[in-house]
Amino acid sequence: MAKYSLESFMTKKVLFVTPDESLKNITRLMSKKSLSSVLVVKDNKPVGIITERDIVKYLSSFLNSLNKTDATHHYPVATELMTHNPITVNKSQTLQESLIVCVVNTIRHLPVIDDDGDLCGIMTYTDIANELLEVNQRLQDLSLVDPLLEIGNRRAMELALKSTHELSRRYSHHYTVVMIDIDYFKKYNDHYGHQAGDKALQNVAACIKNSLRASDYVYRYGGEEFLVLLPQTEADGAKILAQRILDTVINGAIPHCESPFNTVTVSCGIACYDEDSKDGVSQWMQVVKHADEALYNSKSAGRNQLSLYLNIDKT
Image 1: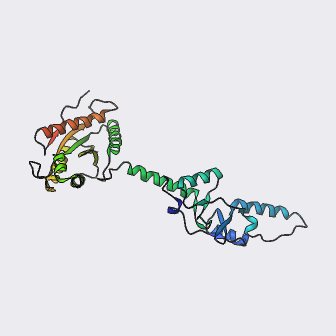
Image 2 (image 1 turned 135 degrees about the vertical axis):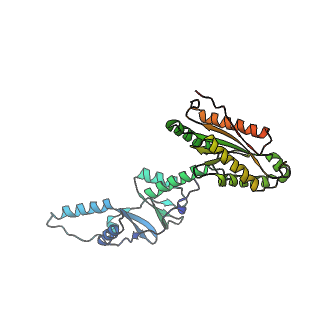
Image 3 (image 1 turned 90 degrees about the horizontal axis):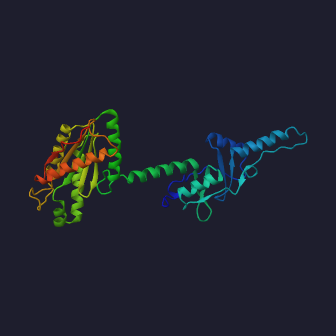
């Protein structure tokens, strides 16, 4: 969070008044712009702040003075209304630090100054809180994405599987898991190098994504393995999709001279969950295990093919 300084998020165009501005002009500005407070600036340095409470306090005192026959009245200016020496923060400070300043001091508007004390922007409590929420969301999103392949990572996969499994149990839906492994990938890396290996991974990931429906999801399971999640899909539909993935990867024609196929291929293992499957908190893990066993069968049978796991335990 430390790298998110105020300079990146503050509003640089600040509405303010000078110390000699009249109450009439101040209230007109606040009303027109729907401001709950206005900054008082002299020589580009914040010297005070006027809030709605300050104005109400003055008007209350003014009305009370009307009962005194010897009272004299005049139109006040900003310096007579403002709270002097407003709390400020330096533009290099973080959003989190600024939020703490707002909370501790019970303030909603925070002038931002530079190292010379000159005004360079303003942040509100709402701005800071909203930015922190957005930053946290972006960080959370990043933590769920594999940076190389730009698909969901292992953590995202586990969250999606858990949610899909619970929904399938509740509404008696099927779902299917397809495990995918790039054939002879170690030999590919050894021959072509790891940079080429990364590029091959990206190409295969793209082939998988291009083969899926809008309702399907692909995740990097680890290394050269992928997991595809097919909600509300039975085995027959999964076999059609897995075959499409096999064909798309072959048609991608990525040269692989260390493979008997002379091109990059993948193997697939398929396992389906339905409402008759044995129940349990870790059942989605069991479906993944079965898909992995089916993948092993594909590789043992010669690779570049798909296998279906047929023996999910029944109650």
